[in-house]
Image (cartoon, rainbow, N blue to C red; front, side):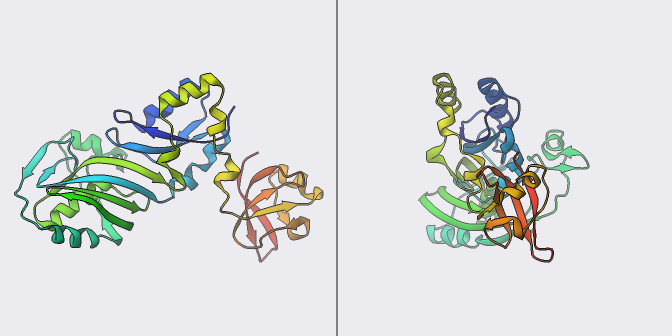
Length: 295
């Protein structure tokens, strides 16, 4: 069984769940998950975790994302993108300077109201299920952060943007909100995720490419190992006396550590340099305690 992360380039027409289902067939393994949903009409980077790396889902989902999107001004739809029913069309009587200033006003932390057509749940039911029944329910605004928004191209009523943001951000809602603020309405026409955490589009593989590499026996060359994904955390190596403690998932005292950082999260290794998992230093008790094990 393979353990690690594959950077998949999700193509239009597939849900993120479809990608996982197809990979289970291609790789002949069940323990597969993804780290951040993309809508069926969106494309781009979808990190997929295999085997023991499925324990990384929570960590990887938290990472910031970068997207390229096309905003169409003058159109509002019920889904906030061009797949939905057009609710109204308005003349676009704005200047490029007005668009630039409005886009820049969304930088930083914002309160964003999730769209009705989303997988968020209210009273156990997904919002898009309620929306398809013609129902609209109140949604609480949620804090999101836009770290960078850059206009790549402008040919009104179309505006191509690059957006770097926190997890849980809806880019189609950003497009809708920009249109609202400009007074002419707007919706999302295209969406491409170019980066998810440390994973970039240039390193991604389509499902067809993964199938070919699997048949050639070369897929593991493109698999990113768990310890490499966690390389931002400093490495700590233990003495031989600590090996059994580590294998049983026990805390390790500072006297059993050869070298390493005594602060925050670390990558823990045995005396034989086997990667065990993520541990956290606790200064009060002078021990490292396990956070996530990858035995």
